[in-house]
Length: 401
Image 1 (cartoon, one colour):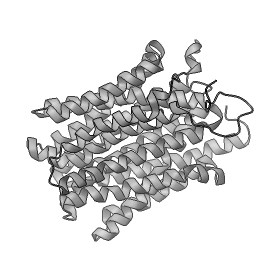
Image 2 (cartoon, rainbow, N blue to C red):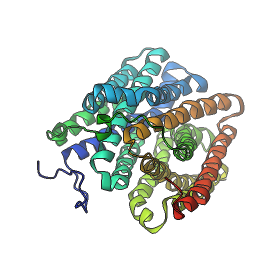
Image 3 (cartoon, helix red, strand yellow):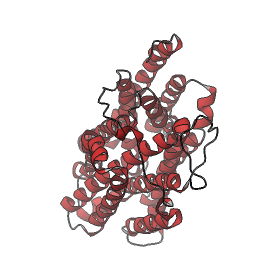
């Protein structure tokens, strides 16, 4: 056994991250970085190609269509091709998608590139999460939280990079080119996993049992919270630029208030989960997110708006990792199935929400269209309260399987 490798054992009491774990964290972060670039570069892409809000929103929908499709077939692809092939082919598809956006002369090419990023990245992400959740079984919640931290870190870097590129007077596509350098550095630093292999025990079995009914409650919570999160990520620069008259560079930087707040929240997610039951924590964070969004949306000046955006980020930060961990925990050992199916939730959320918001914004303006996000965060709060009151009580009396 290579030094630093973790195997599942009842004697394991601490988490030791080997090169494969770091590779998984960083590859998921790379995908998140590329996703995070689309919102900040959209004003420039929209100006270059002379796109309407609705057509620009199709890029976000294409990004989301990838995970939506991968949610239907991802488990079968992973089972057929094996996690190692899925991780690397998916990663290469992300890079190919970025190249399409850089070289594309029209919206057809750039939208196809966005789809490649979403489709390839979702397959790679499913295989990474399922493999690491299975590999570090006793520390599953912490590993998923750390994957989310990596996602937040790299997402936070994306708008900062775009803002820096704009301020330096460089072509906006420079930030997209930088993603190739990032992927190269990740592979070299981790030595492609240091010889370890992606592995999922579940794939050795022929178990075809259904996911339990309570899984779908977490599925719904993830769906509406992710819809709200990515609606903010995609359209926040436009909101700040059009409503509060930020410069384009400042609008990109303003998005960092949301992303950095999400990073801070996820850094403390593990510690908070030891102080409060998961369902109770979900309830509190969704209510906190609702309050933050109201400040962001209705704030009378830029300072209140940015404060609300940060509070919204703190509230949103722990919803996905907590709900996904709970969903995997109750999946009766169907780690890959639970992870892949959750892509239907995230994919459908990101597919419909930004598109609808963009179409509505063309008709009533970006300020009024953001009311859609309020509806989403309220639904997230309602489903988390349901989990807290219903599933929490069932677990207390031993009725939840």
